Length: 315
Image (cartoon, rainbow, N blue to C red):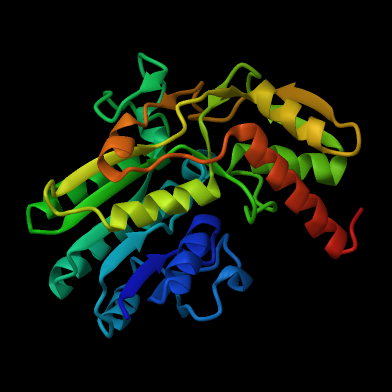
């Protein structure tokens, strides 16, 4: 039985990743401070350490295990929040990465996978971005993700196989519908279900590359199996398809059994106009291909959200 550290298993992506690893017969340890995640999301057989993954006491506790790989997914994931609390953003997204890399080196853990972000590209000169496109972060959150990648590049010289997965806009069944500061699709869907009204911060012409949760987990698992040949690699986890804000709202409304009003207001600090990702590198190197298009994925997500509300006795 192999043992993995998956940080943030009380959250959307971390929980889904931990479930898959456990289902394959592995042991999973997680660290989560439950600031945005829910304890109920953590898989039953997952070993849970409550706390921050930049806390030295937590890191000492992790030394009781020998990890096949460290999969670092935890961290606050809102560009807007990074402006409200930049120090906390730095701690959860960058300091944590540095300290976990140091832990991997000390424990001779040879694989480190990191949940980076498409936000590092900012508003690039081109919309269709490749891994070698010059990054231009617009938020403190994106700066922290970029810094973490550079730490990984350096630590790879110490013999750690480091993989940065630049997640584009992850969505799908199980997403946190109560956090209205992260996840465009989940924010709009949550508003529609609660108030039958969507408040859009920014232009309807902004666009994103939406990647379904199951495809994202598959990318993580493929990255974990990556050969050591090239020690440090960055991969876009993207579909290569752009959907505008208006497209997202149209699909949500189409799948709901009631009418939804839409109102537009000014945008938020550091919000990107949009990029979508070239995924040819991850296809070639890891044989990863996205299975879900946006229309299929959002249909599954809306159906899940409606059933979830019904089970909780809400209309």
